[in-house]
Image (cartoon, rainbow, N blue to C red; front, side, top):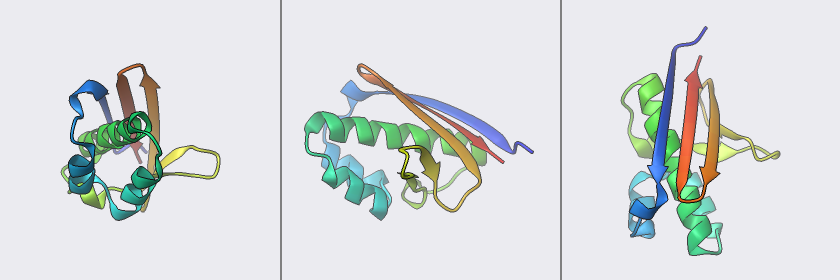
Length: 104
């Protein structure tokens, strides 16, 4: 049974001070992945995607601390929310990223 749905879009051009924002919103495990990204472009895309997922998750499930929401990728690259029954999709196009979350 569906408990909630959420969607969010992020304009990547708005993300400037990546490290500061990453430290404020990313779960420790997500932050390690963020640090492993080699270029500013890849870091910004990753951070924007995680920001959009967290916004979509809050819309689907209710208020929660962003740092407590952990979105990782499985061995096939599919995103998932750790410790929750959600379906997650993230898509990037030029300077935008969109995330969709369905909570069960």
